[in-house]
Image (cartoon, rainbow, N blue to C red):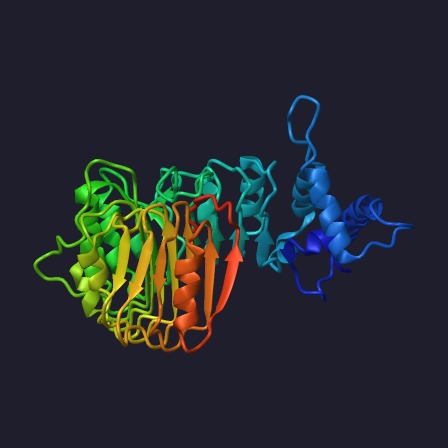
Length: 435
């Protein structure tokens, strides 16, 4: 017997599973509840799922979320025999705001053969110690929850390959309130880990942070750091993961102790396979070791307050195709691309200071699209000699005579799109580490 659609959407169970009579009766009762949303009991899977979710999110009279579906799900799961619950490999609870610790305990105790568990946007604030029973878990998604740390007792999930954590701020600025779970103790024992996005360095947690160097299969790493000391530890980790790391995202907490990413250890190797780099928050300049990463193809900067010399570090990178200079990434009125950038294809510029963007002779021959968003007036976009430009997208107020005149001089006749003239500055983060 198949599970009802709205529940099957959240639980991955093979269609051939044989349920006991007790479990079947529970499923049928659950199905009747779902059927109330359709006409004469005919409910498509998508409609049932949406109707169930809508019911779950309904507010009670005293502001308490009434979520009978979560309780029903927990009751239904409790009816599975161990032999039956072992078939369940995926549970996706994203958006179920009434999820409680007792529900998680029940899942961990009964369905311990899970491979995928998502608690994203559930509002859960604490993980039970029973989470350690999920020894087959491969993907654990706790993004946009209130979970700050793993249970006090050391947790080791030996098959875990993806740990997804972190939540953005409400105002669109990554360094304003962006947080994530602390680095779990003994994380170095989880040697199958390939993606960590994001974890938070904490004071006194140096051992846990340095334990990351044991994860020699790690491809993507996202971290939150605070101050010079934690930055120095991060650089040690990055240097030791130089053979495997392909994506690195660094969030710097708002602090007066500005980290220096150029303060590398005496023995340091830049990650030679790094293809994507994202840095958010004030730093003491773009690290010069970036110019030695030949595979770097994508860079995103936000609130880094860089200078022209920092941008020049990027121009010799032979595979750099995407540059995103988001809010407060660059602190001069004129952004110059005087030479280099031979592989650049897509440029995003966003901010409140830059009023002129200049491209020199034979610069960025493959650049096809520019997206420029600004709260100040955009005075000049000097693209006369860009050889590959096809499209310009402007958000905000701009000097029409100047910019349209420059576009008209370009032999490619690029398309100009004027969007969102009342542009409000927001930092559109999230292009680096996969989330």
